[in-house]
Amino acid sequence: MPLRHTMVTDTLGRPLRDLRISLTDRCNMRCRYCMPREHFDNHEFLSRNEILSYEELAMVVESLVPLGLEKIRLTGGEPLLRRDVCSFIEMLPKDLDLAMTTNGILLEKFAERLAASGLKRVTVSLDALDIETFQAMGDTSEKPETVLRGIEAARMAGLKVKVNTVIRAGYNEHSVQKIAERFLGTDVVVRYIEFMDVGETNSWNTGEVITGEMMRSMLDDLMPLKENHVGEVANRYQRGGQEIGFIESVSKPFCGDCNRARISADGSLYTCLFANRGNDLKSLLRMDATKEQIACAVRDIWGKRDDAYSQNRGEIVDRKIEMSFIGG
Ligand code: SAM
Ligand code: SF4
Ligand code: SF4
Image (cartoon, rainbow, N blue to C red; front, side):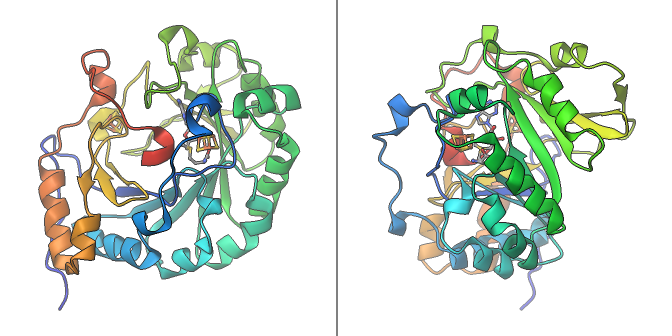
């Protein structure tokens, strides 16, 4: 029987358009701003039976389509660490906009298969081009060249590519210019991200935030792009024909049109990146709920949503969930 649901909106009139799926809480890097080693090397990661299967995840996706879902982003942790990820992409409805965020270490190996399974876009995180800064920020022995080869392989496979660069004071301010220069003249969109206060372990403080405004002052000849799409997280500019975006969630919060839900690898639905509590969907799935029942549960959760953390930053003091768990 076809699902009879109609589009859902939250208490602030925001639709549910975008679902970010954390495929795993594990990662092959230890970025200091996300999974600092002292907290994560001895961390108890989720076990196989705690995480949602691909069948369960596909069931969630199909249940949300009638509510207005248009876009899926696979993330983590590192999504390319999840076994047989391409078989999951093949299970997803192809009329959805299918994207992935990855650190790019395994991208060269997977690019062609990702494109063949229906992925359209990939966002690759790359904080520096010089090996010292790359390894210091990622707390890794991996090399930036590996990520650059991954980006090239993704482009060759026909995937649209964006590069995400987190700028943290005292670590990689020089990356603003270097990364823009590296991708000038290519179709790769570069986006700079303000260092955010996600989770509890990255010892965030405002002194380490380089704002979008400060980053823009490091780049000459930037021209604002007129059309910003609704729900688009980046403020978009262009420079020499290249698109450059700034994700300014600290200095210019964009909760007003936030249409993103997140599902953690263990099957909790979060209505905000900064939520301290998820909504258990796994129990429902494992009680053999129908798509109708899952859609009703999510409609109920989303209908009560009033999250606007970035706009109220400073007022909320509850414990926050780690970004590697909830999915960036
Ligand atoms: N491992 C994948 C990756 O790094 O692309 C996907 C997951 S990661 C949590 C998603 C994005 O979150 C990355 O672009 C990363 O740079 C960003 N991120 C993580 N911690 C952050 C923080 N404290 N502030 C800003 N961005 C952060
Ligand atoms: Fe891993 Fe991505 Fe977090 Fe870095 S930002 S530790 S690559 S999940
Ligand atoms: Fe959306 Fe929450 Fe981020 Fe605001 S703080 S933009 S509501 S995820």
